Each structure stands twice: as structure tokens, then as C-alpha cells.
Image 1: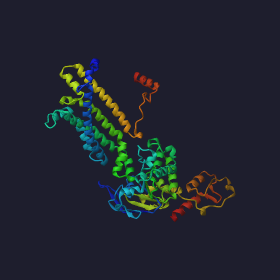
Image 2: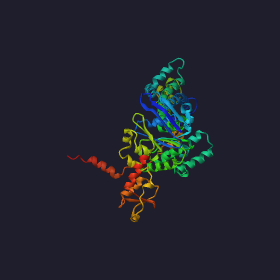
Image 3: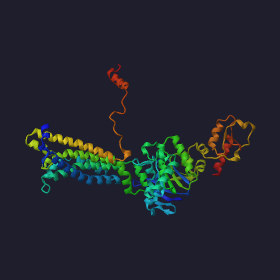
Image 4: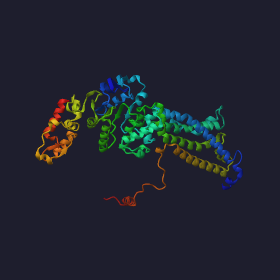
Length: 245
Length: 315
């Protein structure tokens, strides 16, 4: 395994790690761009006008129920799309839409009604209420949706290799085809590392775009409220003591 | 001046919130809409800045039928404070207060000066509180920010919906007192909604008592509402202790004073500006049952009763 990663030839050319990583990234970027373009404005707008809540929730649940793998095969076997990265991009976008749509809708919808009422009452237009009050206050929820979708897409983009696309999934699929466990495992490891890195980056980005006052306090390594030892001991003692007859 | 002319509001689900309501609030007055929950007092207030449009009837503000005015422009000229304030949690205190001036496109330095003046006015020194966020303030402080925000452009009309509902009784009394000081000689017309008759009596120049079906039961001075309730509903709403409530808003009448007696040196003493409520409290704790009002004379229980009855008769 270490030898595989140490081999310079695996870091070069169109089948090398950097090239596959780039392919993976491009597939993810396109599918996320597609999903955000569709789901974010739609969710935000529906939340603002407070309409079709049931529909949004249903679409969200339905979307989660669509098997991405089946959709991928279906798209790849359809003539105009065929076996390509495009099939993967569309399938992944469909996969990414539900969390973005639901969170955008809920995020806007759940903004404190008193804040929006005050905003309207002070003479903000609907657009100003959305831009100055609803959107900033819902950044944490909307960003969480996008972040969830991103990590899921990065992990699932592995499937692109099954329909002839590129990406890190190639190592796994090729390893499987050649009965080469080292190659397969190296691929899995790369995907896992990529996902963790993306998750970390997404979390950092989410923090940066969240208005200062709405940011959660910096997590401390030590738990803030440690139960007093005596309390712990009492609890344990109480459990040990048989109930009185 | 605000005039509601036969205003009715029926919601799409068939609920009649306000029924054929007519009243005129003179400029500079504090009018309090009071009544049990669900009586349509908030709906009535929201029809003034067109957050709710009446089903029938007219609302006239500053001589113009509001139905003919752009609601956004109308609202920018009317201050608005709601229960639990609705401050914008992502913005600092300064930015919250600056909301309407920014909407109106004031210059930055003018906004800054105005906002700092307002924060001083509501007792929140800007250098301490200006850059805080709403979640860093107490309930009473948030309420003060809400009032400052509503007063930002010194609007001719101020609408307040249960503005002191979310704070503890001590803080509420203090805010009411400050609000009174702020409004007493101002030329701002205020419409305040509350379910608390004591708050209405304390703050209102006139009180509109609304009944359960969105019907206006009485619109009169606090003295009149407490002293001579117009309907059984009002009498019930202001309570059997209405005359006790009245003590808090009745001034001392010199004509009811008795001359000072040599023994009155040890009697409790109150200034002429005291209310009858304070006088009564002092009488109850006085051995002689007599209270000195400065050097002008003495009030006894009989004097208090006569003052109240004369006030009701004259109302």
C-alpha cells in the first residue's frame, strides 16, 4: 500500500492521482453548481412567500428515495447522454437537490416571524425583507444544507467511474476489474481522505459566511459542564443499591 | 391625526376581527387600545400602517385615505414597536436603530449622530451598547432598542403592540414611566395596544376598550373609562376595583384640603404632585389618618373619597 502511494508513476499522467482528483472535483463542482442553481433560489423564494411547504418536504423526501445508482445507469443508457461524466453530473445534482431545497425553504421559513413583521412594519419592501433580514438570518441553515449535499456528492461521485466517467472511483472500479486489492484499497482511502478534507473546508467556509452574531461559540476541547464527581458517584451508588422491599 | 371610519376586518377564514369601528385620535395624543385577547386590538393597530387592509371602511392618516398611499412609504413614516421587539439578531444595536434612516437614504454621519442620541435617550449609552448584538442584551434593554429604532426618524405616529409585555414587572414599570416622560409633551401621536388596563390607565390620554367581537365598547379618557364605564362589558373589564385604579391617575385637588392642625407636624408628608394612590397609602400608615400635602393643607380619607367622586362627576 505504502509502496503504491510511493510509486511516482501513480502521481503522473492522465491516470495519476492528481488527474483523477481533478476529474473528481470537476464532476462534483458541476453537479453542485447545477443543484444550487435550481434548489437554492427555489427554496428561498418558496420560504419567503410561505407557500407549498408540503410540496417542498415531499420533493425532499422523494429525492432522497431515488436511488442514485439506478438513476445513473438509466441516464447512461439513454442515447443523448450516454456513458460519460454528464450522466454522473446530472445524477449527482438530483441527489444534491433535496438537502439544499429543504434547508433553504426551512431556513427562510423559520426566521423569527417577529423580525420579519418588524421589518415589514418599518417599511421594507418584500425584497428588502428577504435580502436584509431573512437571508442573513438563515445563512446557518442554508449553508448546512449545501455542506451536507457537498460531502454526499463528493463521496457519491465515485459512482461516475461505473458509467465510464473519471474521478477517484476509477481506482476502485479498475482495482475491482483487475482483481487488484491494493489499487482498490488505495482508491477507497483517497476517497475517504478527500471527503474528510472537503467536510473540513465546508465547515470553515460555513463559519466564514455566517454573520458574526449567529456563529456558534468556538468549540472548546474541554467539556464546559462536567458533572461534579460526587454526583457521578451518587448515581452509580444508587444504581448499585437494590431497591428497598 | 388618525381617523378610523366604520372599519371592519373579516379574515378569509370568516373570523370577524374588527366590526364597524370608528374612532378619531387627535394629533399628539396617546391612545391605548385595550381588551381581552382576540378582541381585534392588534388588527386595528395593524390597519393603521396597512400591515392589514380593512375589508370595508376607511383609515385616514394625516388627512389621506391610506388605501391610496403606497404601504411601504406609509410605514416608513410610522414608528412600529412590537412585543418582544423583533430586533434583527445578525445586526448590532446601532445598525438595528439605523434601519429606517438607512431605508430613507440618510447620510452616514447624520445616521450616526441620530442613533447615538437615541440610544442615550433610551438609557443605553452608545459607547457601551452600540456595538453589541441583541442576544447580548437583557429583555428590557432589547425593548429599549426597539423603542429607539421606532423613534429613529422622529415619526409623527408611533404604533406599539404590547411593547412592555416581555419584561419583568419592575422593569415594565420603569419603562412605562420613561415612556410617559418621553411622550408626555411630545407631538407624537401614539397608538398602543395592551391587554393590561393598568398600563392603559398609566399611559393613555384616551383609552379604547374593545369587546370580544371586535366591537368598540368605549373610547374616552382613563378617568371616564374607570369612573363611568359605558357598558357592562367595560365595567367588568376594568374590574370592581376600578376606583382604586383611578387613584393612581387622579391628582390632588386643593379644594379638598383641610387646614393644617398644630398636631400635624408628625403626620406623613407628600408633595402636591403626588397621586391619590400615594396619598391613600400614606393615610393607611399614618396614626392620625391625616397626610400633609406640603404646606398647603391636609388630606384625610374623606378628602380622598370626595376628590375621586368629584373627578368622576366632572369627567
